[in-house]
Structures are given as C-alpha cells and as structure tokens.
Image 1 (tube, rainbow, N blue to C red):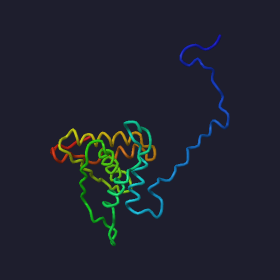
Image 2 (image 1 turned 30 degrees about the horizontal axis):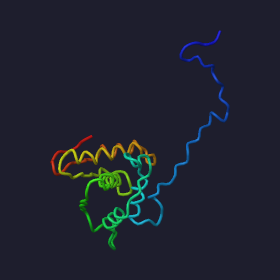
Image 3 (image 1 turned 180 degrees about the horizontal axis):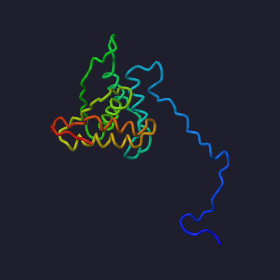
Image 4 (image 1 turned 180 degrees about the vertical axis):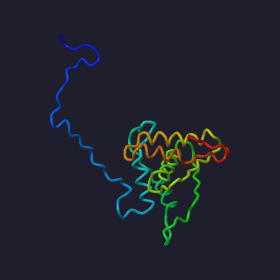
Length: 173
C-alpha cells in the first residue's frame, strides 16, 4: 500500500549533482567601476534601482536628462574633493519624477556610494503625508532591489531618521 497524507510523495535519492548548490556569482555593483566620478557613481546607483509603480513597474530606473544634470550639479567636486553644494531644492509640477528621484538619492546616501555610518536623510514637504510618500517609495525600492542585500538596506533605513521638516513630525519606522 502506498503512502498517504501530506508527505505521500516517495522519498527521492539525491544525485551528486543535486547535493552541490552553487551560489550565483555576485556581480560587481555598477557604481563600483573604476574611473567613475562622484556624480557618475550616484547616477549609476540610481539607475540600478527598480521602478515600483505605474506602467514601467519592475523595470530599471532610467534617469531623464534634467535629472542627470541636477545630480551632476549637486555632486560636482572641487579641487579638494569636496562637494560645494550641500543643500539643493527641486521644484517641479506633479508627475515629473520628483518622488522617485528623492527616494533614489536618499537610498544612495543611506546604503549606496554616498552612505555614511549612522547617516540621516530628511524628507522635507508641506505636510507629513507628502514626506511619507518619499519614505514609502524608499521602502518599495528596497524590497524590489536585488543587488544589495535587502537586510542591509532595511537596517540602514530603519537606523536613519526620515523627517518631515515642514511639519516638524519625525517619521520613524
């Protein structure tokens, strides 16, 4: 009489090929290529992230020309290797990619090429709801991002403070 119940499949003997499982080789992060400038590393990191909503959900983020120019202007270094611009403001109409760009740059500073130990990122908006949109986009990007260990990114994200400066209400995870 045959086996019955949950484990009713006959036990299978593993062949030598099946017992050895190799991890896929870890590919080099695109922002770690030699010869990239600081702004090029940031752009490479952002373009390695995944779009999380809309028609293009699941595809890689492709920065528009104005977004690349904005990043290059912010991350240009002087002769000493320091950024001269420390604060930047971007004001555009709705549906122009501001939230995704802000979330990508925030992740770049939390777990990407611009990360610092115990770094902080502030999402400034008119109200808590608007600042929360950036936070939610960051979380969505992390969960779909396969290049970094998701655990590492989540630890860095939850260790950092994301604050709605205009509302003076911190968003904590």
